[in-house]
Amino acid sequence: MTDTDVIVVGAGLAGLVAATELTRRGQRVLVLDAEPAASLGGQAHWSFGGLFLVNSAEQRRLGVRDSAELAFSDWLGAANFTAGADRGEGPDAQGYAWAQRFVEFAAGPMRPWLHSLGVRWFPLVQWAERGGYPAGGHGNTVPRFHVTWGTGPGVLAPFLAAAQEAREEGLLDIRFRHRVTSLVTTDGAVTGVRSDQLAASAAGRGEPSSREVVGTAEFSAGAVVLATGGIGADHNAVREAWPAEAGTLPDQMLSGVPDGTDGSGLALAESAGAACVHAGRMWHYPEGIEMHTPIWSRHGIRILPGPSSLWLDADGERLPPPLFPGFDALGALRHLTVHHHQHSWFVLNKAIMETEFALSGSDQNPDLTGKNLRLLAQRVLPGAVGPVARFAEHSPDFIWAQTPAELANGMNALVGSEQIDGDALARLIAARDSEIVTGLGKDPQVTAIHHARRYVVDKRMRVATPRPLTHPKDGPLLAVRLRVLTRKTLGGVHTDTQARVLRGDGSVLPGLYAVGEAAGFGGGGVHGHRALEGTFLSGCMFSGKVAGEAI
Image (tube, rainbow, N blue to C red; front, side):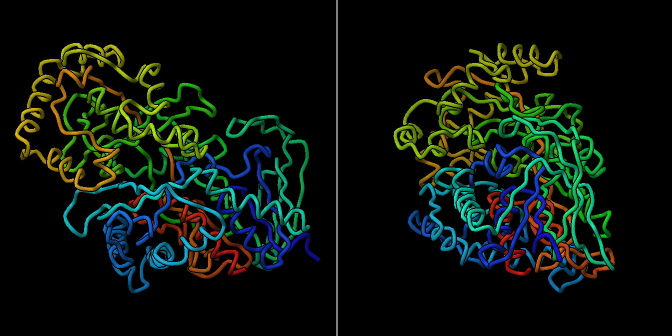
């Protein structure tokens, strides 16, 4: 006799979707999570709520022509799966199969399913990860980033409601402060878990909580689902996994995830005989700034930039095309790490900041998170959105100046070096401005700016009117120091297309499933080497749904 039908380890989005799908089918589910109850929903709560949808009603209303075929072509250009994956061969075979199924889901049932649960979207679809490479290379050919009305909490809401209903029906038991320490196996199959019971904690959502052990427990079940997330908060693990050919990560990094995102589930799986694959594939951001009121350790926020800022490395050299803001996050990161830069810079002016800067996260978008139409209207009016204006006023990473020479002095003072030459910075800005005043220009970034403004959403609210950085009405000049922000693990526990965990020889490890970031969002790496954005939350939901249907 088992304690429950299924144990789900992790109460984030993927775990909640799996648990509620199972309870909807009449299964008894026990969810265990090391954090206090305040952190129910995990990282998804803090997210911008962006979802990768294909050929949606929102896209069609904006005149965007998309299709599953185009989206999958873009996916393959980003993923760069190893040869043979399309034939079911090699280390990316499962990732490729998951990618096919996910794109079909994103182009078909995902939107109706979520819409039926009450989820809605901001009608102006955003264009993330533009790529800028030739056809077949990395990047979204068309805008696909659908921001959920209510951001991350809006994505979580229907699953939290379903969980509450299942708890009232006696089908779901969620136990917080249980840190799973090992998987129990019987005759080669996973049949339960052992856990440390941690001391009660009053820590708020996302805050570090005590790891004091006050007891132990063991639970049995017919199946166990790992939904434990990735390694983003463990910077030592991130450094160990970072591939040598990608250079060296900076000495100091920021965290885009709470402290509990430590990769513990990967070690649990491996100890039980599971295979973990593609450890060196990660998705961190080079556009991080330190949070002014931190909640977790080394708390950072990502700037979501438009395409007009100059992007300079720590020495003041411009990043090469197409590494413009918003085009290829991982490409820009690897360029910086290969050249051993500790930070980089956006150089722009006040007008560009007010039009093009947004901040990732539910807490940094109170209009969308709070579904506040009055605040939302400010996004299309002159001036910065409130949270951006606060950073601009209070963050030491924002350097204001009237001239390039003064700007260079401020940049050097911030980092304690003389890496930025004021004369060289002035020449760079002048060269960029000379391209702008032609109305056309041969500079690839200037061309990209003009192209972006052909899309109605970008022209209206995301891309500033092209003018010289030194235009007197648009000043003062601004430099923003950017640091690496850890975020997502693209590799993970190897699974088949039913979310069943695989051993190193490719055989199924009975009784064990993995979902969400712990499984590389499906198959141990559905994204391959790069992501197209909006695919993390939706990947959590899809993999959780698949597991719930399969068990």
